Every structure is written in C-alpha cells, then in structure tokens.
Image 1 (tube, rainbow, N blue to C red):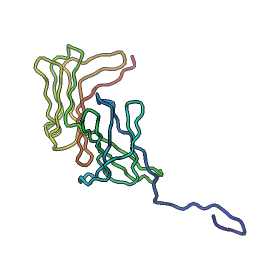
Image 2: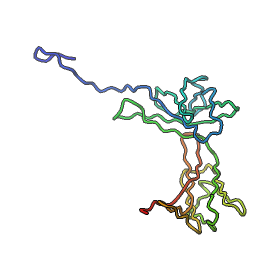
Image 3: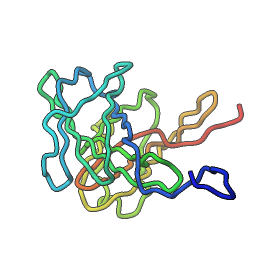
Image 4: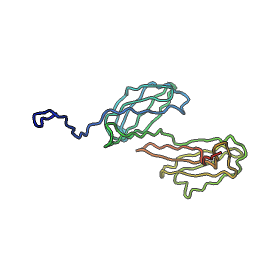
Length: 198
C-alpha cells in the first residue's frame, strides 16, 4: 500500500519468489505400487534428503514437493525391494507463481507385443536409428524390444507390412521414443498411426 493524494492505494511489485510446487510421479506401469520411502538427490549424486515427505493417491501416483529450481533425481523405494528413479526438472515460469515441472521415469528398455496376428513384416524407416535405440523382434512373434544405445534422444518409426484398421484409427506400426533429463533416460514403445472419421 502507498499513499496518493491522501488515499491509500494497493501497489503490485514484481517478485522472484516461487511457491513450493507439487509433482506427481506415476506408478501406473509398476506391478508393485507400495512405496516405502523416497530419497532426493541432485543430478550429480549429492543427497538432499533421505526421507522425502510424499502423498499417495488413486494407487497410480505419489506426489512430492519441490521448492527450488533445478534438476533432481527422486528414487522410490518399493516394498518388494525395487528402486525406481525419476528425473525431475523444475524451471521458473514468468507467468506463474509455481515452477514448470517435467518428470521422466528411468527406463532403459521397453517391450511391446502386438496382439493383432497378421501384421506381416516390419520396416524401420528412420535413418541411423541405431544411434537412438537398438530394436529387435522375437523370431516368429509380434514382440518388439527396444533398448537404449545412449547416443542421442529422438524417435524411431517402424511400419507394419499390414496396417491394423480399427473403428476410429489405423495403426501403421510402432514408434520408439527416447528422452533424457540430466542423467536419466527413458525408452518407450507405442502406437503409431492416425485417427479416422469413421
């Protein structure tokens, strides 16, 4: 507040302060979803906390809070002894009081089994895809496996000889997407195709 012509008027000042920001870490693909503990460290390996407060909801997410910008590694310790690492990147956002958040689950390989039997042969159309991921197909099967090569991020497109026509979409093949935040890499295989107006 400041006084102008004998009246008090509110004033707004720009601030560099940000509010602690909640981050959701997905448990969706994990078979064991019981989280015993979460630790937090920098990308360089410096431990920041041995016991991060967290909240679990819907059996699909746990949430933690970050109060400073930067890149972090959150390690989830599960009841079955597994340790799952997630990259967290918190960036300042001039249009918000909260940080802009990106997360990435560490996953160095992925496997996809196509349930439709008659897809025929497959062809990888991305040039120099070996720099992104190595991709194999089980002999006589429709099971595809992608593994990180660690050279660069990117996507690899595979096309089926016979596309799969569904009610509202056509699957032409698969895509392998490789992402990285700091030292954490993620390999993901998914549907590739297009939707229809049928």
